[in-house]
Length: 255
Image 1 (cartoon, rainbow, N blue to C red):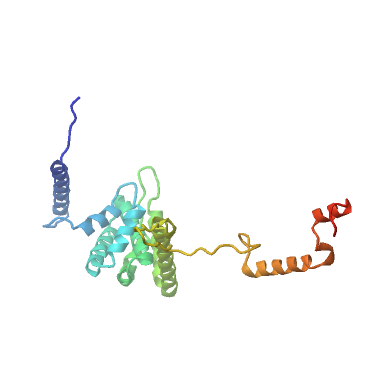
Image 2 (image 1 turned 90 degrees about the vertical axis):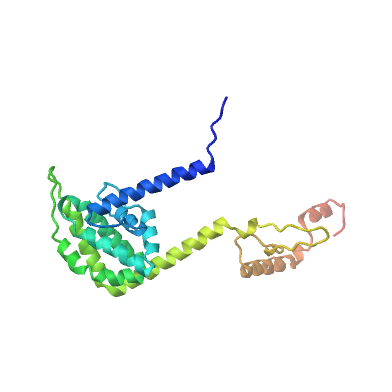
């Protein structure tokens, strides 16, 4: 049976063709939007997060854009796309709503520049509180836009609360990263490799339990329990164990 082997060069050719096709698509979209050059990677990602599709933006895309926002130049690009989407009307209500969602995410977890630039969008957000679009099946899709834009305006207005929230989310993200790193690189799983004639010392110290110690008992509690036990054993009636006392009563041993 013959087997088909795909070489690395073929895979690279497929990848290059895929990237070229994406570039052509971006170029066509750019021309439709009155531009003379294709969209950049940041523009593509921001436009994807605020597209008119019936799903998204995903948490992964939001996190990626948040990280990119710490680049001052790229942050300007992201906010420009958000402003462009916020100006959409009617049937593009999904793009408007997603732009508000993206803005809210960046205000909470993006760079400080996002907060500064977000304040410039307050007048536009105020206008969106009157956004209206009713579909052919009489569904008021403008309601979500109105409510979300009002909530984001309130978030921007309360600067102290926003700064507190940003610190809390940043600390939570930091702890999550530390926890994930700990799971991926646990110290306890590290076993040094010994060389002939060389003593290998453990990289971690795990103290052994002392007499009477048990899991979940503090050192203070253990000392207290040992003192009680010592006091009980010092009593005259406890100087001989129960087995010895039974044997003595039978005349087997002398107490």
